Length: 197
Image (cartoon, rainbow, N blue to C red; front, side):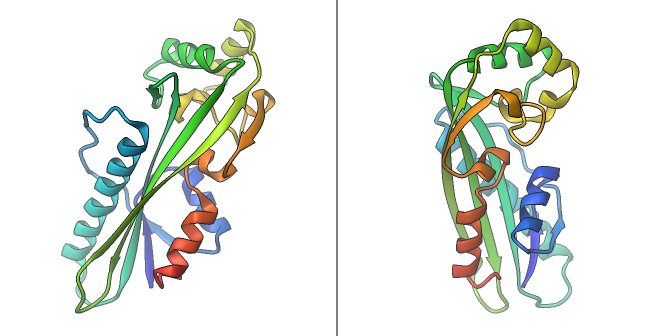
């Protein structure tokens, strides 16, 4: 079955490749505006919007009856009931990192899989994974130096666990890859269960 990843994220692409899945990248044009404040509900809803939007585009363009699945995902960081998405600017990144410093926060990734098979109704499966992440205390100089690298600017919560924020992550409870943007184990077994791989 042909697989599409509804994301421009290089981290998600890397995780999909680690699962041994060859996926075509299709970036969603879905409207991501929402009033949802619960992080689990938010990422689940946004992952669904992305996957459904890309599936609709593929369905319009496809001439044959080749079965396919689309994987959509969305990730946020949450602390004290506040959702932290990607920083708007360097000051926003500094505020986020100061909030995370010396504390435990949660990373939520919502995933939606849309499955299309000839002669059958479209199936949509959504789920969310949560990972707890412990941060060491960061000094103002460390925060400033990290922001100066540019690494935080395209990442939820203003940090990349797999890159230059590694010295400040003291513990993880849950799926490490979930913090990168896709819960690898859960996604693999869900795709297998649905006959996508």
